[in-house]
Amino acid sequence: MLALAIKNLIHDKFKFFIGIFSVGISIALIFVLVAVYVGSVQQAVAVPNNSGADFWITLEGTRDMFHTVSILPAGKEKALENLSSISLASAITARPTGITVKGQEVTVGIIGFNSDKKLMEPWKIIAGTNKLGKNDVVIDKVISRQRSLSLGDKINLGGTDFKIVGISSGTNAIVFQYIFVRDRDLAEIAGSTTNTVSYYLIKSNQSQATIQRQVSTILPQAQVRPTASVSADNKQVIASSFLGIILLIVIVGTTVGILVLTITVYNSINDKKRDYATLKAIGAKNIELIKVSLIQSAVIALAGYLLGVLIYLLVAKIAPYSIPAVELNLGIRWYIIILAGSIVMTLIAAIIPVQNLRKIDPVTVFKS
Amino acid sequence: MTNKSKPIISLKDVSKTYGSGHSKVDALTNVSFSIHAGDLILIKGPSGSGKTTLLTILGLLLSPTRGKLLLGDRLDTSVSTPAAASYRLNTIGFIFQSFNLMDSLNAWENVALPNIISKKAKKKAKARAFELLDSLNMKKRAEHFPNQLSGGEKQKVAVARALINNPQIILADEPTANLDSKTGATIVTTLCEIACRDNRAVVIVSHDERIEKAVKRIISIEDGKLIHETVGGHDNYCQHNHL
Image (cartoon, rainbow over all chains, first blue to last red; front, top):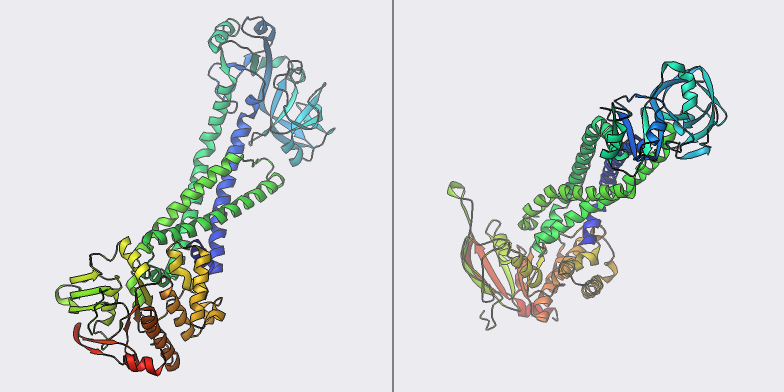
């Protein structure tokens, strides 16, 4: 029956390929949207996850790194390291700011870090180094691509020229990209007007409550949060901003896929109604004909899935050149999830054709 | 016309009514007869007399409104069950006026279909399909698709398909209607051989008067009623055609 199902399906090659193409496009759309979402989440959590810290000390009430600003007094690293619960403390400044690149204003997320403490260093360097000297900067690869910046080029930050010594990957937060400078260079630019930092990153093997109790004696307005909690809140920002829209478009893509599958299989059965009536007359049971419908639906869905994967891989290959800020990178888990979704799509799409098959009256074969 | 063997199918006072109230149509009224192994029966009658309704009831595709349909000793009650489908698959072979071959399958694949539905191995099904096509001088056309075959060749493929599961009974609906006279005669001879050589029952519904000369029994129906049953010219036909 497998051969019959496939032969009946490919008998009209045009309809067959249009069916596969349409399902492929729907599945590619789902892949791209899921990849955009997953990529956005990965970028949103990349900074805290790669900070190397166990806990973050933030201003009380600060939730994520995008919506809420954390401002803490500078110069508390030594006092924090003197606490029994903290083995290492490093201040960082992280905030959106404007830089001048080749005469143009560009918004970036600037991270000023203490290069002696090994916390919040740029973690993935694709060119150059992450060992920064005075007025050196590491920039994200997206800015490098978008602005045609290479190692040795200069950008202007607060009136001071910084030399690009490294290009980093995984430091793109979609709405802006991160650049990394030494905290003391940043302090020099700010002068005495901003004697503040954004966070203190700490290494500790003590409980959150213990650290919080001790930190409160030095920074009474601060809260101690596990790095995972900062990541979760960053992720939540992306989820609340994009997830609804992405889910809606995924639902539209899935619905289109189901409709195309349904119509293709329904038409295939309708075109061959007399064949199916004959099959019933000569002794095929309904369940065997239902299998035919399911096989047809599965063949189109599977071929559409493979085409969708190919289209997605092509888009993912092209995207960094056409839309550098968008990262499309899905793990194998998502390929399996979307394949499982395609199987569910197959089953749903077979419902109406199956009903149609059940209604076919074998007596009609006696009408010439 | 008496046959001492156990009947394959018996109809006892079978009636079939379509619709209800003012639109009620009595397609068959109190029809009774039995079909035995080796029978070669022609059911004849004018258009609308109930011939095809009778054939579909015999083929377990339609339930009688009243009366009994006996399959051997067993009373059949429903046509839409998997058991009825199995009975059709294993006991009945159908030959249709319009051949009803599948365009997407070639000749041997069409022939093998009932074997495939019975879940027989494809290799065996193919071998049996080729054997049957060979017996009908159709081996050379085995790989051809229906749109590459003549009407007579299509009907031979349909005959082979009807035979592949070794059915006890063949039901043929106007098997010569779409064929020229020479090809029609070949098909009739083939059906005769099936009845005589293989001892299968063959029931033919037809307007074709030439078939009367070939069959053993002629059942005439009119307005849904069995008018009379007569003896056909089977013995002479067999002698004449060296069957």
